[in-house]
Each structure stands twice: as structure tokens, then as C-alpha cells.
Amino acid sequence: MSLVYRQLNRAALQGNVQALREIGLMHATNEGGAEKDELLSIQVLLRSLSLGDIQSLVPLALTVERRAGGNLRLLQRAEEMLQYFLESGGPREAEGPPEGTGTVPRGAPWFRGLWRSAGCRAALWRIRIKKRLHATKLF
Image (cartoon, rainbow, N blue to C red):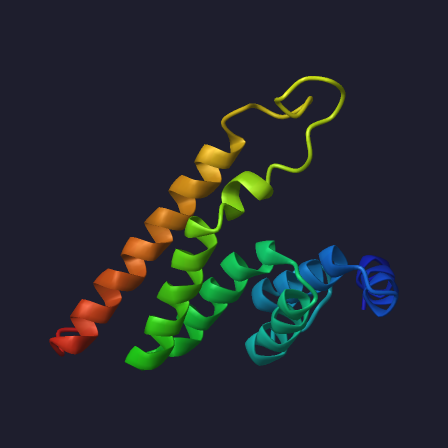
């Protein structure tokens, strides 16, 4: 295991939800010396979500989508997670708090939340298309 993974684990044990999210992403994508284990990734992301980290919804939904295969119920659950993230203002919250006196976060373009929103909407449509293909038995 890598040093980064160990440090993230230590931070996660101390209650750092961002560290939990990063560990979940590492297990989902096989990065940073973490073993690829999507079920463990889902458990870690669910724990992060239970601690109030709404940004965990997107990687959780995408991991569930990958694990779904032909299961329409799991695809529906992933769609609901992304829909909730978009409706709750998750992309705007993901920008982070404004720094200084300006209304736009310094060091980050003002349209960062728009890109996140567009990416979530694209993933949402991909899931909807998969559901329709599975429902018609074409996929």
C-alpha cells in the first residue's frame, strides 16, 4: 500500500469525509496502490455519505452503475442518486466556499459548477439510455 493511501486511512479514521471519498474513489479506479474492489468502494462512499458528504453521491452513483450489469433496480438507484445531487444544488456546493470578499471562489473559474452539472447530466442520460436498452432487451 502506498503512503498516500495510509495517510488517507488515518485521516478517515479521524472523521475526515473528504478522505473517505478519496479512499472510495481509489478502490473504484484502482489508483494509488489500492486494490480494485467496487463493493468496498461502495461501502466507503456510503459511509462518507452518511456523514453528510453530498459530493460522494456522484462517485457512488457511477460505481453502482458499473456494478449494475443488467439489474434495472440498481440502474434506477444510480439515476435517483444523480437526480438528487443535481436537484439539491450539489454542483454548486462542490465549488467550495468563496474565498476573500468576492462571490466567486478565487483560483477557480466561475463556471466550475456548470461543468460538474453538465457531467452529472451526461451520466444521468447515459444511465437512462442503459435502462431503456435493458428494458427492451437490446443490450
